[in-house]
Amino acid sequence: MVEISKLFKSLVVATSLGLLIASSTFITPSNAATVKTGTTCKKAGLKTKVGSKNYVCGKNPYVTPTKLTWMLTGCPEAYDLYIEARDQYDIFKDVLSSSPEGTAELSNLQKSMNSLDTLMKNQVCKRGK
Image (tube, rainbow, N blue to C red; front, side):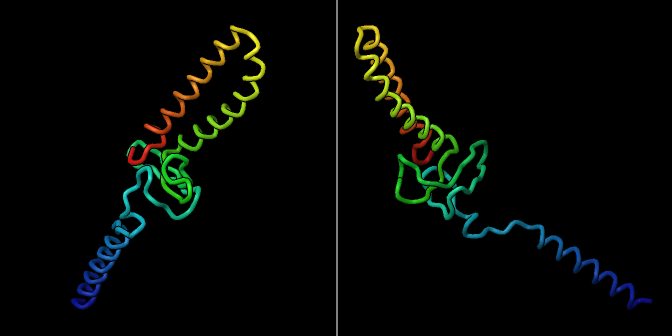
């Protein structure tokens, strides 16, 4: 009877220790790296959340467009919109430049696009933000 009690206690201790170890968080090299805009990542399309910020792995057009880095999820979306707007600008330029009102609107459109580009470079896609 005493041996069964000892065996049972040993089993409970071993099980508890095993559960504690299994539920512990281990720091692996992939978890140890700080995720922020501009740090390298392994696979395009991976997503993670750090605090309140959401990141995606991909090619950041403003940091290092030739390798995979972490960037805020808004960066590639905003960049795609900017490229689309820039392409559309060329179409509108031909149409709007024929009148003084159109020229003024064209100037406002160019200022807005420049502002968007600056915003992306300095905040949305900036390294370390």
